[in-house]
Image 1 (cartoon, rainbow, N blue to C red):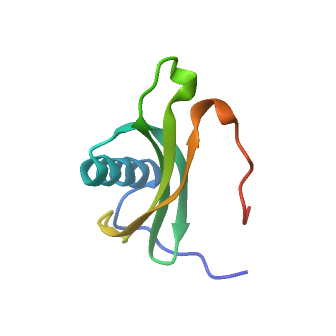
Image 2 (spheres, helix red, strand yellow):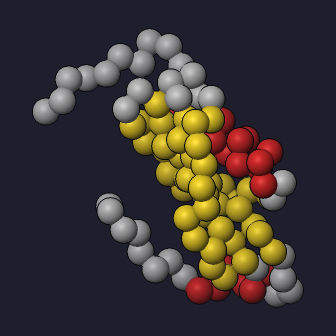
Length: 98
């Protein structure tokens, strides 16, 4: 088992999630649907954020996207990327690597 990491400084999981969401909203200019993942990694955090990329009527046709951010120990953005795009009504196809 790896040694426990000290998180004496930097954000909590909730703070990291909020920071990741804020970064994605600022970078993409899109409306957030919510946070899908917050996990510690190395000396920072990985945060998944779902956003609406294209609104449709009915809303089941909305195009959503899943973004992943990597934050440093202080909650500052290291990197981000879009993992996938999908229609709201298409359902979850499962996650890889879980």
